[in-house]
Image (tube, rainbow, N blue to C red; front, side, top):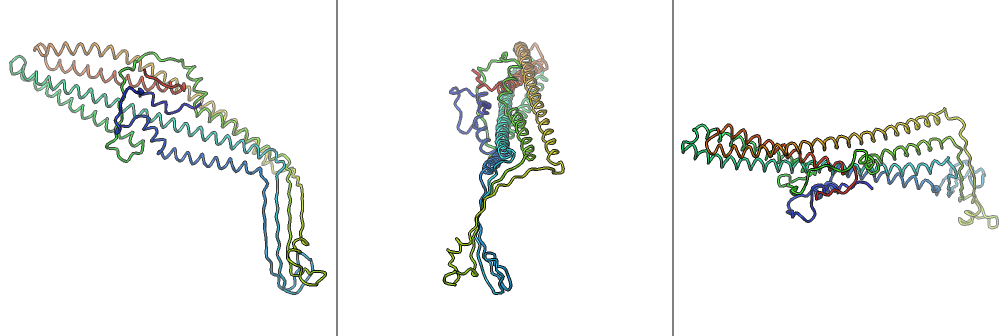
Length: 447
């Protein structure tokens, strides 16, 4: 069973734990909207329809062909009547009617192999369609996660601005009381201006990330677009289950790109069998019936022109035949085509190996990124604890007039950077672990 892109919804949502506003876009709503409106997916659906038509046509090729025909002829001057074979110099007219059918009894199994090949082609296109859906959902999840990251960055920037505003007020009181020199108020005000600029930048980053996702969804109203913010409070960053080999073996069985490559090998095997079929004898059954009318056919008893219905019976003819065709020499084109199909088959097997190798490398990279993010998270978490305590100590000493505003700003900037680094490591870890779970084909739970 292919990994449903809906599983990505579980990467970030806790069922029943969060209430979302109707104006907000959840991840599952984004994915559902993209599935319904994405132009590339619609084009791939048309490709599926074409493949279905080709398969149906190859199946219908097993049926006998049949046809009916009629003609009306006017003859002037000397001519031969096609029904009586008599020469006449008078003007005459006649009609003919015919029907024919043919059935291929044996063609080297070309028709059967063509049907099987077209079925494989349809399956390949369906697998490619699933891969396109997975890629789209994964891309949406990546953009969605980037927005969440930028939202938290904005919150951090907003908090820092609020803290610094309070510190400006306290510093002004200390300067007025003569505890701190007048230059400190200028430095802390400069820090406030810097943090307000940083807040503006994070807001712009958030707007741009929202715009990126809105454009990916082909939304017309991008200004009012916003996403629901799930809670990550219960998410614990820890060791992830599964080894690289386990994840890779699972991915081999469920990833559509692997299935598509495997089907391509079978496709070219059938294509090779079709080419070999052209070198085998073919046997065809044909049947036909014909009749006609002529104003030169006379009734023997009355001497008048024979009645139309009587002429149809009188002039009717039928045939049944079996045709055998044995190809002897076709300028070696058949053998050349077989050689080319063998090369294509070998190339498809190489392509399958390339896709498997690419998949393993992707899993290796995701696992390496997840491990690096985990190590970075743990190290940054310890750093943040230390820098937070250091900032509190610095803040107390600064409020007492024992430190300069430069010391205060440095401690605060170090803590802010650690908060940002921890946030980045957290989201990197979450995303890469979800990638690994996606390759395993498992529903993902955060609780």
